[in-house]
Length: 589
Image 1 (cartoon, rainbow, N blue to C red):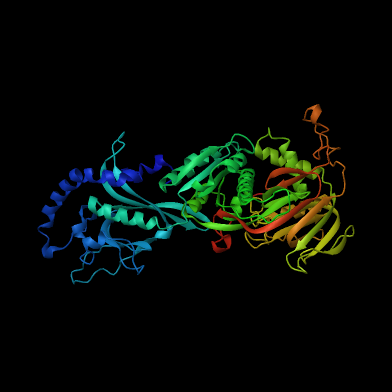
Image 2: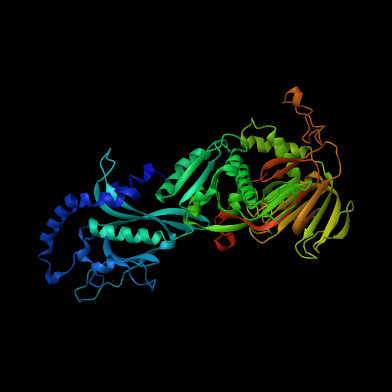
């Protein structure tokens, strides 16, 4: 399987020429390499009775093609009315056998050439294999070169690069069509290139952002070793930017010329994805003249976003790809698979704060705030420490929550706790807002399923990527042991929402306003920290509260208004419901 240039160039002793050199370098080689072999083979052809063709494919040229395909038709245009009508046909050697290979407008098909039996009947075992053109992303001329040789070389044939699916995983695969005839390979190469250029959704120029500090600082290595070779193989030009600080990608997206690109790619974790997605959507509002200091209806992003997972959780990548695998994500980008995704806008005091996909308040926000204060620790230890500290200091938040259900009388609400009261308020647009007050341990608002290793079914398994709604999950005040049981259910087949203190709603908008100004972290002692940070509260002195928005810490001093916007952003990927499900292994607390 093709993975890196170093591995690929050594496959079967051959290399693949770059697209600009393939046809130019083909002819000089033919004068030396193919003529001498042809003379030797002509001597072997003379004693064959009946003028039968030789089944040794590499020695055949265009004159040896079946009579049904003329030389004029081979060099003609690729536009055909019938997709099953052969465009070009020839004999190639695949592995150690010779095959009759046919190219149509939709696929490349090859059938093994079987010798006739003494009775004149052809062998009945003729297994046909094929590759759909929609699964093919590159075709290269294959040559054998000596060490240090940069151009030219002995022509071996052409190589087809295509992707194969196994569950949610996509793998790149190679099929070598060996033939030493220069004219024969040139005809096939031109036709295949013309057909592959007809896929308009496939990007040819990408803006790539890499966060070198993501997770274990492996994002740059992941891109250079696993993704960049595939982009080069597919003739995709990548404009690479290695981010130097937080907000670097956002500043670049605000100012750069996006018209020259077919898409934007980010390599990193959820924080990097959140920043680039926010930058794309914010740039679209700026170009459309939207006033971000008011409540407005946003416009869709101009370019699709590709996500290469290189973080610790990769929630967005897992939700759209179903798997944390950089090669799978890269192939989705190369093949032009696109999936519209709902996005949320987060506003406070009538001003847009950012765009995103999910948000957590309470336990989720406090855990992230703890982790951010210990950035010097390794990622895995930092997450475990923050989780333990948040559970040890588990306290509810007193807040007022209003939400607009997707439909009046939405099912799924659990029994109300005694500490809350409900009332209905009519929205100005005719919807019915529901308001509840009380103590909550955690509140989650999610527009995507939020799949991850600790929640293989998703933090919000009842929502979808583009159903135009958000999942509102409210965990009320309860004991620490019951809350831990609720968290553990995310990693099991049991329903994590079947507790009396948990409510779920399908909503279009949410307003959350904390009702206390106290600091929950004032009593927390941190023996291992310096004295000046022992009394530092998670809630800042100005009364702002920590929110976990797509893995990024955001402090909001007052009410936060969250709205869902259907299909606001397009991601490179596929709908998981249309792909084959595969088991996911994970671990939890």
